Length: 148
Image (tube, rainbow, N blue to C red; front, side):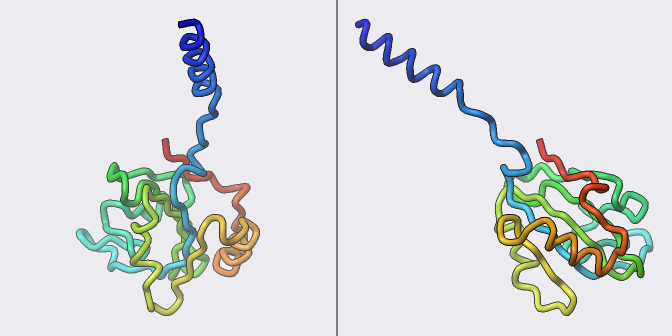
């Protein structure tokens, strides 16, 4: 009986001691350079390619911090966007519950689409690529997407 109590106590303290994973490491995340699409008219918002209207941040919201729009646990959960200096490209950070949500970007043959997966490139490499399109871009000045 005492052995069972000691074993239960050891198990319980071990489980309670585990640290929670921070959100930036909990989900799949990519950064991408994609063309802007849409006419800007009602019903056809100007938005980054691969994002439907309901997930696309407006130009006024670009670079203003995280924009969490979706509650689909396997779909895209968070979007952050910066518009290139010439206005033709969007620099986006996407967070998804499952990597398969990024498949349209991964298989795209559209010229100019580039993507970078977390863990396969460094933040400095992504920042260098983004600076080609937005000269003053910096992750340290940007607000990271936080998905809770």
